[in-house]
Image (tube, rainbow, N blue to C red; front, side, top):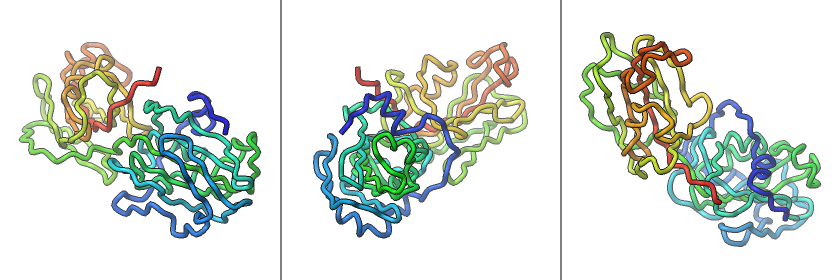
Length: 320
């Protein structure tokens, strides 16, 4: 099997442009296998989940519709949305010959986080097949024609009407939104936060003047790792200005942002420092801990900023 360097693996196995968010089943309705997995009875996957797998199958192997099953059950955070960040290793096999085609490096590097949506640009089958998967899961997918990008696999001998088998080993799953316990806050004079079913927050700024000084409230308290600043933190955030009451920036329209505490305004860093993964934080940032008397894009000079931040995970450093 050709093993791709990290950079090439990303180019070949995950497109780099973003697509719009697509809906996917809720984790509460987890179905880790497709409705019909009879054909997959002919596919035997062996080997450690930490290494490139081996498969045995009767060839030529064809499916008319994509089938998938979970061969090894993982534990922990589950994939529940196609906009969710995951770290996976993937090995591809030809259904026509059973030969290995391509594989990610399988080198233990947990820094290569991409959304399910990105993987689905090349492999639409992943959107449904990876629902319910969690760290440690191994999922086998028999991809019917149309559920993979045939043009990108033509160079390795895949014809448009071939079946391609993907074995996906899930290494890491980030939260899709804060999942911590709701916290009681008095919050007099502070903004109100409402949430859509997918966790996306809306911010209602009250009438009246902004409070003096930095205000931080933990709305949900997660039980994950602590944000210390030693690792980049992955977040979803929405920001509004107190006076204009309009969203000037949000990560919810793209994908979770990775940031270090020394690369954001002091008030934002203070809101994250010491918080835990799974938490949702409301912070009101006075100008002196925001952008001060300098305008910043659509943000007027001297603005008080309001952010709601969902802490989704900590990023691992790339392997040297």
